[in-house]
Image (cartoon, rainbow, N blue to C red; front, top):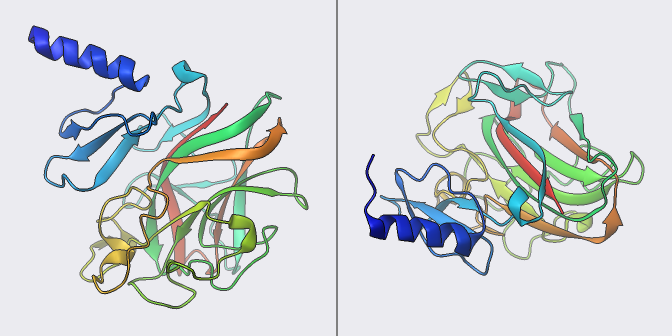
Length: 277
């Protein structure tokens, strides 16, 4: 492949301006670095929406990677504590059980390194019906359908970020993504993403809504009703940044939770990237 000198100069400048690695450029177009947080890549045919964002949470910026999983890579494995499913494709979920309202968890080691910031992204899929917060408020329990990131041992968990999976269409109940000003568990403050893969005429394979990945910032899902204010793009997914109230060297806990038993609804994970600083 041959690059013109102007192309080489542009790529060189982009690397240095964004201080992050450039991956999966084609078929995306790139924007400038927003607020020093890396550069955004937008689908060429959806220029108004961000579908991926390479942020400053990369090792060369002082961030240390603690987890990087892509289940489309056959050599990657689910985090310990989660179960591998292969239909419709390789995804990580909760263990098959007839129990309701439970979590499976995985401990992500930080190797005693102190950190004050956490950054990352998770890409998931919805299986059947999910219920958002559904009125649950206790961080020590299954307080959401989706993924919870916390630090600290059981009984003293501290919230980092919540990745919430909501019901099938835009609505105003507690099983949907919260509207602006809606009541959510107080410990979350505003540190969450919410999305839904289920929308009218969505395609399912083995019960999994494959058309719309969760928390990727792409239109669809719970904002399928244009009369409802957008709520799936609160905090600009896919990347989150969290500054902790104090430095800690406690491991991070990933919990995959759901109100239903696994046969009736679940959140499935395909990709996870987590960094600390």
